[in-house]
Length: 511
Image 1 (cartoon, rainbow, N blue to C red):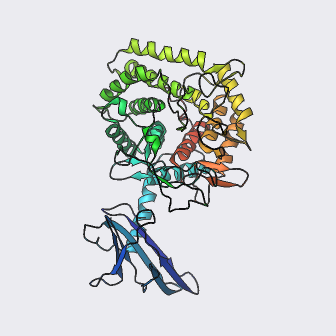
Image 2: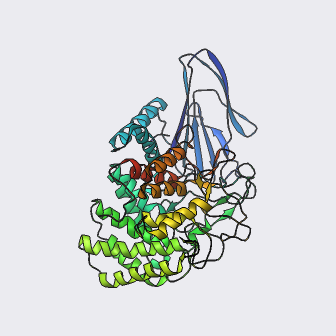
């Protein structure tokens, strides 16, 4: 997939390495998520070129191999001898525009390889060689998930890959989550990709501009807000895991933690030396004014539950992060704001979470106020600086997570049940980002060997290309959920630096 020009291309080159091989290629083009069969025609004035049209979409298919129509497909049968190379180029373009100019497949291959090598080598990875390789792969994933025209980074390029085979937990992840903001910025800046970090911040500021009460948890790659969720009943789903969904209804939920992520992201941008954006602080002031009232209420939480809103502990802690970073911005960076008032709000949130979110009988913080349930999002409390990992309440929380949420050495988000908090049928895999969080907590507790062992165990789950999804089935030994997953690769990068580097990313409150 060459670096994007005006139109995106996919290039395939069949290379004859040894002997002689007969091939058959079948291209079945369907628009509208498989529902729309296009009109395909051979271009009379351009040899070896077919164009498929339907509504707003068009594809141009070019190859020197002979092609013909067969059963609503474009078929090619050809032979490749040793030393021969046969290219195929597929290009999307808006149907109302002219067919894009032909590209040279061999030039595209060379340019693509050069682009990625140059970009990767520009990064700074002060890590052991074996860890640097997996971090570099994760950074490449992050770059590849970036929509170049806007700088938006999608959570995954797929939709409806199930979190458990046969389940209804199938969501559309082709959007940009604000929850990824801080980890994305820190990963890019720490690894010397300041241009991408600046583009991500600019995307973030554009996306959240407007009424603070209307801030969403996710947006389209261009900042789109209307992400209406639909089910596609004509598709059977991955291994029968229906329904297949496009759009995401969670975009309409209230999730208080995103305010903390946005404030922390913009704070980290200042700490790490990104040039100041004159609009950023004004937007943060408006967000804080809104959050001062909003944090008192329940929300749907980090896991985007489809059940009743609750007072989730993680959400309250991230509201604390928002006011904490505002205080630090005034104290350490000379910005103007009612810092004494923000300190009071910050302290009020902290006090309430410690009183209502901690269960003395369990010796642990809980998923929500008044609950006895555990939640792996509680592992974030020491990582954002709410309390030190050595605090007895957090030690007890980490031990409770180990006791109740570990499965085959990996961490579940929470225990799914028929009448559970999320309003969905039970069953999902272990959650890989949460497992990386536990490795971070081990490191903060001085359990370095355990942290390293868990990190290497998690990295070992990646496929042959070094890619990871959101979840994993330890019994079947297979990846689950949308793929590849930015959140997982971001936590991998952060964990690697936390365990093996002098530039730990878990000290998000330092500076």
